[in-house]
Amino acid sequence: MKKVILKIFLLFWICSFSGTLWSKPQHIILTGSPGTGSYIFADELSRLWASSRKTSKTKIEIGTENSPENRLTQLSNNRVSLAIIDAKSAHEELKKHPGLRVLSVLWKNWLYVLGTVPGPFLSLESTQTLLVHDNSLYFVQVWKKLAPQTEINWFNGRRIPDFADGFSEEVLAVSGPVPLREINNWLEQFAGIRLLALDQQLIRSLRLNYPWLMPHKLPANSFSYQSEALAGVAWNPVLVVRGDFPEGLATTLLRLIFSQKDALNPHILFQNLLRSDNVAFRKVYPYHSAAKKMFRFK
Image 1 (cartoon, rainbow, N blue to C red):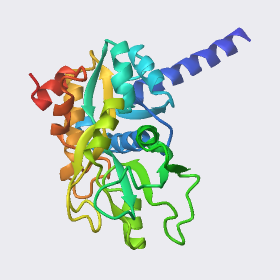
Image 2 (cartoon, one colour):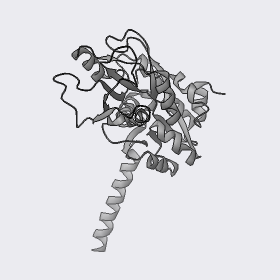
Image 3 (spheres, helix red, strand yellow):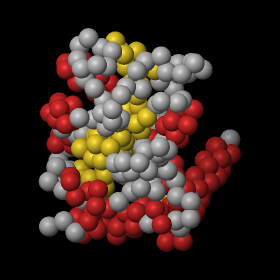
Image 4 (tube, one colour):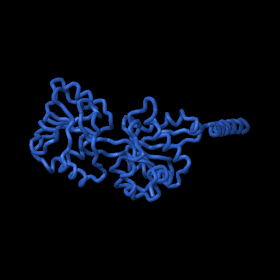
């Protein structure tokens, strides 16, 4: 009986060892839940990594964690190799983890404001009703301080209003990348709806309350019927690693990410990535040594 048990144990050990021996080394990247921007980005990054000859000997696996703070903790504790977090968490939480470094900021999430109000700007004084996506809570919190009389209604992916008869509210606000298909759909479908610029008072107030928001101009012709650049704000998710993440591997990863905008049909979250987007954050975030070289930071 003992010999049988011993043989079973040895067989199990050999199979386990063989699996370890022949499986590819992996790098786990922590993201939000499936359907979030961080998960979608990591999923495409994993596919690109697997299809590249230079990186085919290793693989990137996705791990999910809803809390950005917990993602950073797991990364600090060497349980994973990379993590993607939102800009707010990067500004507030990275300083609590001195061993972590930013590899790059990623795509821009714009605050889109569409309305039927007259004029090119969103009006604090005359707007009476707002329809806001849950992902733009930061916008509402500032707006209510400046225009408390405005009636606020909410929507999200599970609770989309019926737009069959047009927009019931004067203004709709939602955050997302460029291009966002829903924006073009609304602009095409509803006469009189157009993208609105934010006035400088609102931009200053948003920046004062949320320094992780960056002032930007949405380039002209980003969407249908948008003939001029529009002043607004955006924020960038952040790709984080430990300071000891291998420099060669970090460089390869960065080159893969930023080469996609020149690909034939790049993914939406990759097609507008620019190395220069990191310049605005060079004194805000602690960057990895490979990133400093890539982005030519002093």
